[in-house]
Length: 352
Ligand SMILES: [Zn+2]
Image (tube, rainbow, N blue to C red; front, side, top):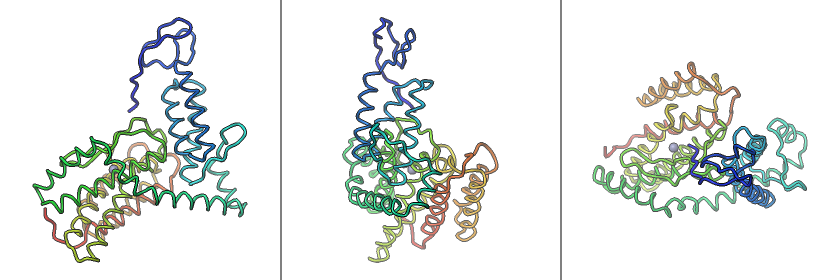
């Protein structure tokens, strides 16, 4: 939800402006013109330094201070959309004389990749550079959430609850799995420059990251939503690999339950991660995703997949769907269903 906790002010024209208003009702002057100038300057500096995520963060903050029906809002929203696509492609914004270089649109970029081999190689190197930087910073990012008192406190509370139910080893494994899932969301949110709260554990339920800014693009919603299960899958697969290497069945149990929880999160309903992923899928893509779920259920007989099939089927044939197909979102969703289903049915005794 958008939070508008801005104090009341006086416009230079003499009108008192009620809190929450973004432009003067008398003279139409923007209330936060000075802040907007500062934000724009910071965003442009970030762009020139190749820090696309940083620039996105500043521009999004500027959007929060602009009336939705203003011309500037439309201009900055278009800028955010372009930068967001650059972030996804792993391409830094190249500084231009005007400060911000307009990013190529999806289609144009596609043809440029086909046509100019040399440019493609440079772009690929940039992408690779980003991946290396991401790998190095992942460890640091993973610990980031632990510096927040609310995260740590709620985590310990949850750990205590699971501990009394299943013993400390399994409880700790479960907590770490959930934490890694949440940090997947947090990393994606930082990447797209979207403000959110640190992860908060809800004992017995899981954990949540609450957004402070609305995600308007179905594509961004899907990337942020599916990043959690992606990282969660990584955690479950890692735990399973350790269980095999060290012959520790308790780690296999953590992998299995972790995979099951992530699979549950793929339900395309309410504000679960699956619903965010489905936000970007066209009707045909949703039907395809449901077909893959049906296949996974046929192969594994896991009851949760039947529930997933029913909900995904309902979302495919009823309600609103995205007009444009999002191939990345579909690929991620289908991959998650397949991999998590396989891990959720490994043979290992559970402490539950
Ligand atoms: Zn999630």
